[in-house]
Image (cartoon, rainbow, N blue to C red; front, side, top):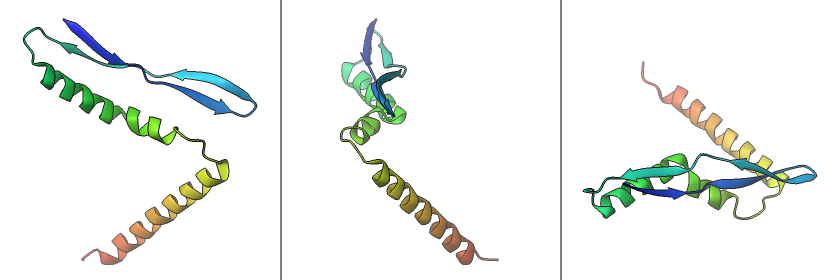
Amino acid sequence: MTFVSVNATMVKQSGPRYGEEVIWNMAYIRIDADEPLEKSIKRFKRIVEKEGIIRDWKRREYFEKPSTILNRKKKAFARKQMKKVRKLHTTKY
């Protein structure tokens, strides 16, 4: 039996104290002796995608100003609200 794993460690920046580490659980799979390697790699990719490790890494790749984060969240909230309003007006009775 073989273990394949990826370490998903991220550094959290909070105010003047930089370098606080937040360690997530590692994504790992168990590979049986008779299981094809391609199938196990595909399963591993699926788990990594489901946990959002790559997406989170890409999001944290570059520094984003707090004002930019706030603006992005406000725009996302406005989009959600507009979607709710459209959904309410288009429902059939």
